[in-house]
Length: 93
Image (cartoon, rainbow, N blue to C red; front, side, top):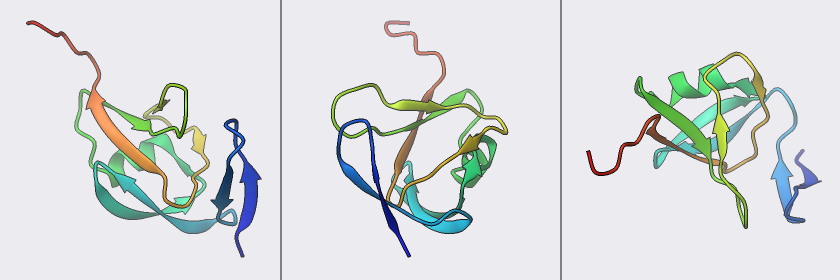
């Protein structure tokens, strides 16, 4: 059974019970992931290339959340969108 949770933008998000799979999107591809998971597991699941960082899209105002490639726990929400971007961007080079 799903529950409701308020996020910082005062929107209601559907959450899956802990230790269940949720549907997420990484770089426009659909995946199922255990919830909670780790940043390292998301990098592996999404096949994020070396030299790239993974970001969770944040609804509303605010910066997207960078997900570190480590063992720290990441709580997922049904339908979360993630994207990868180069770690260092050098425009004009």
